[in-house]
Image 1 (cartoon, rainbow, N blue to C red):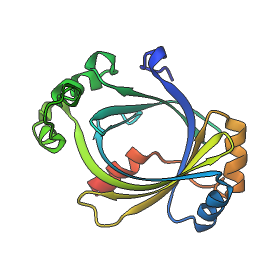
Image 2 (cartoon, rainbow, N blue to C red):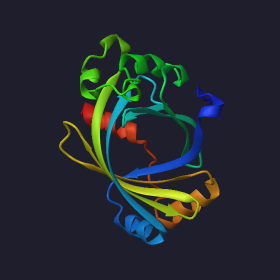
Image 3 (tube, rainbow, N blue to C red):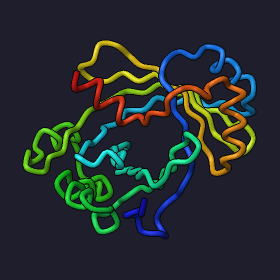
Image 4 (tube, rainbow, N blue to C red):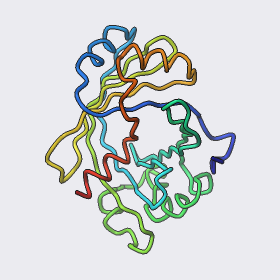
Length: 198
């Protein structure tokens, strides 16, 4: 895979994400973690026909991840945050302009829900709002998380566990220690879009 991201505006890491309770893995993750941080998030995911992109608006900032490789069950994602349309990869440069995402940086009032509702259907963009309750952990050089996700207009909340980092060997060892080696690795945006569509 060849990334569409500018080389100087990206961060690349491996990620492994599973869905469900996984109680043993969750408890061990908390035990192994040297740092724990809790956060509540409100995200608007933006879906196009290209599922290799995972795009969302958080705190009036466009965040995009692009799947650039897969290795040993892990997905390698390139990510960036964008404050101007000029820096965002296609097709999100057009979407940036359509949503007026530069407005918050100019101090103007901004209503993302209204902007989403006014999107031109010809753009082929689908938007889904979600609320996340997340616990983040640091395990050596790696990051781990447990996140509960509530999708607007979907009754059942979902739980996901993820580990991520730059060192694939360490990630493989941690995945095995957590007992997740046989679990499917499925990205957040794929599960959200499927749940919202059903």
